[in-house]
Length: 116
Image (tube, rainbow, N blue to C red; front, side, top):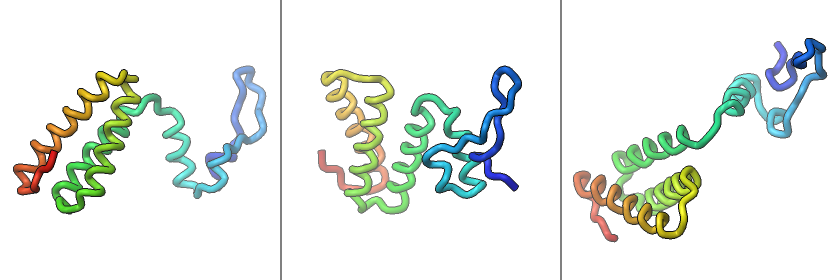
């Protein structure tokens, strides 16, 4: 079975082009290659933002005392959201405040000590 990264592709004129292989695809197995091709078609970072939110929730439920990991994940989330909306500095401060509020709202019901 050929890997998806090395399959032959047709050009818009119907001529067969040489197999294309990207820098990263050479390091992937067949299943990863298929996922890689699908990922290349995704635009934007909304899915990553949603996934990171789910992971933060999971961390808070399974390892609520891991403050370092929670802080790193929420910091990554705020950077993704800022990139998504290309916010200026005033918006960044508002977002940081909002993320802190979400953490507080999640931490307190789970019995985690919240330190702003």
